[in-house]
Image (cartoon, rainbow, N blue to C red; front, side):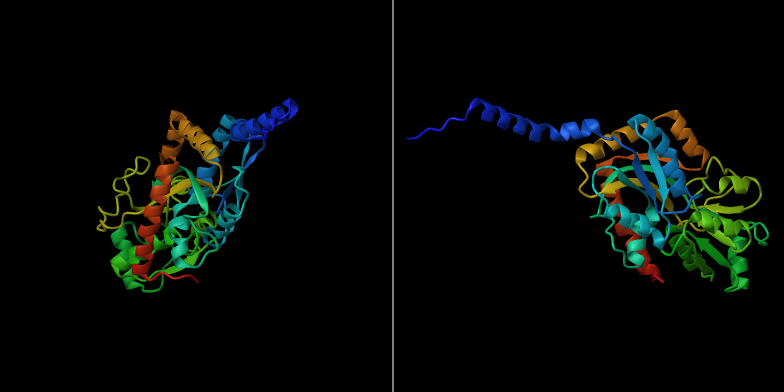
Length: 328
């Protein structure tokens, strides 16, 4: 039998190569991040999605030692930013701060080029918040009951703004219309910010969205809050009744805002981001800032967020189908 022996230099080279292959994930993780991270937001500045991104971006960047740059890419019911992240290199440097309405509802309303389940790796849920039904102050209604009565007395006269066709604001208002048997025209915008601007300017009559972008305007008397779609009243709006108190117990709608990476991103990178975010969200400062905006700092790690994403996708798919909501 012929036995072949490797030379010492060759053995050393093979050993070094083997070590490099085995150690490369650890080395990559130790180096991550070694440059700025881009956090894409599928909505215009001014809404809760944007606020969620900016609330986590600064402390996350400080903790990681690299800046986390928030980049707004609104439009197409979240598809512009979502597609950009879905097709990005899965290296942890391009992330998505996703709004639940775009993730769990939009794909059921109209065809999208990205898959909310298969194309993304869940990292962490950041904020959760109920919706608030608000109207322009000049509208002659002060309660949800009065809004319904006004809408019935003035069919097709009222309109409402949303952050886009198929957004949670759209679906939530359509549910209210079905429950109350009223007609209110839908006007979609490219994000909550532009929708809110037109509501404040009196171009539209009402909207249903999360508290953060609304609180200052409500307290200043520029908007009138009629009801909150959560199970309890908000500490920041103690005088505003829940939808259940206003006569609509089944109008329970909450938004969530979570971070995702492109599918295929190394699990070590996902876990590092999730662990860092969890530590930030446990701080009193972060939780206080979230509460001041009428939102709740509700952390979910990768596994739990993956499960919740699927549950919400399935739940809202049934609602969209039952409501007959279709794309433009």
